[in-house]
Length: 374
Image 1 (tube, one colour):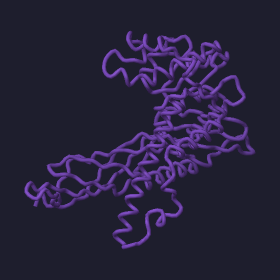
Image 2 (cartoon, one colour):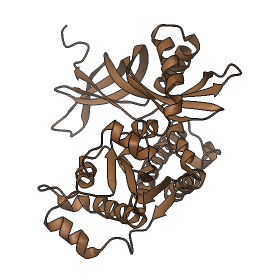
Image 3 (cartoon, helix red, strand yellow):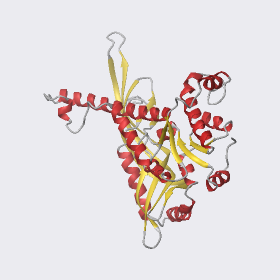
Image 4 (cartoon, helix red, strand yellow):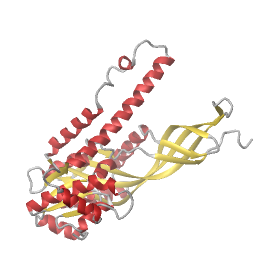
């Protein structure tokens, strides 16, 4: 169906045309596949309502694969660090003995499945199996035509998971004679929805949830207006603290350009300032709690240390050409979730905040050794 305006979506929600809501894998990726974030746990607002949260088994598998991959990489990095520490400090213990609180033998696949199963139970979601819902002939017809989500050029084979997921979701909505609201930043999902009678796509989760929570709009507007006027010191301090906490743990990847081989090590990331951009979005709202999403542009100074090396063509060894430190200030768009509790005065006061923590790359530009200009 054609792209819906905000007014059309509001009307569909009011008329209870929307029977289902689902998320694409890229929405989970925007939040680092951290299923503990409030923006995801807020999906439990649809429990016992006329709107069901559904996920294709394809999406379920992809999200678990992303969680497992990240967990596996972090465990491998920790194992390497522990081995290096053991050798440098001449310790007799092996890695697990040096880090008794960490189970380095745990399966990352089992960990990811446990995370996903707990998430599904918490929000009361339904998993749609593709088998029995997706016709092989229908899939081939989409592939060879090509119809969305298959692209007209490029590697169409990579679109098979999306095609299976979308056809299964469409089948569920068609059988129920309802509309499914899909949240995806993928243009192919949007193109598929334009030809579907049962699926409509919006580009981000806060925008989607906002339409289901009009009652919280005035409270959110009041809080943000106070923030913009400098009259909300508690909220401002919460945001500062959450950004600083994220930056303290931010293991960003530094990069640069040089005639030499670069071995880069992140040093620090420091908040310089921030400003609110765009409109806030109410994620959920009831008599006890108000949760909303806010985008800010944050100015951050990143610092990194670089070791510069060249390859000795005779010995085939890397030779150090010195080192240098570099810093750069960039503006990054950050999404925050603000949690507020109801007060006796029928207002809502912020008590916690969460930043969508994602790994970031920082380009430091031209990197030269300290002695280069001597």
